[in-house]
Length: 114
Length: 109
Image (cartoon, rainbow over all chains, first blue to last red; front, side):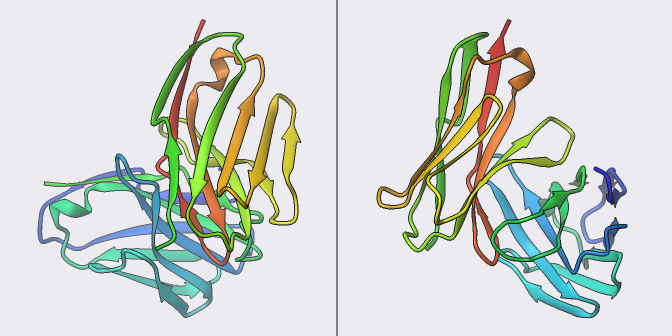
């Protein structure tokens, strides 16, 4: 999607290894989000950021950490990957942060933990 | 707990039919309600956003309605086309988005 990119697009990793996913935006939006999507579930919020160095937990934050040292980059780290973290991860950006206005999503990262 | 439910989980219809996708939510203090489209291997695209003060929104062949009293939103697709095949998700939008699991729609030529 224009203005937001996720890397890598696909990754296979072994249980117990650390993994970092990157979200990069060129829109200068204040709010950035990490979601995971699993079959039978909607998207579930992992962490979000409302500014540089300002982050907060979402619904399913256990086992994940995030960092935002620059407006344009939001990193999601799995400290020690587990099979339950096999999922598709989406990053999103928003200018307003409330009401659902102006959300733009990345194309997703498919992570497989073996 | 605030929950959003979408029924059916999957739907397959012949091309040309009008169809309705359903979204229900348990939190009556709804803010806005948003419908998204998701294509395989791609991100999500916002289709329609209905603000809490509105009852419906229209875009082309799509019409979304919101009934807060019954806790329901519907997405109406007129004259369906194969290109409408995708997964459609609804989300309750306040400070965060609370998502339904989606309806996978297949339009058969």
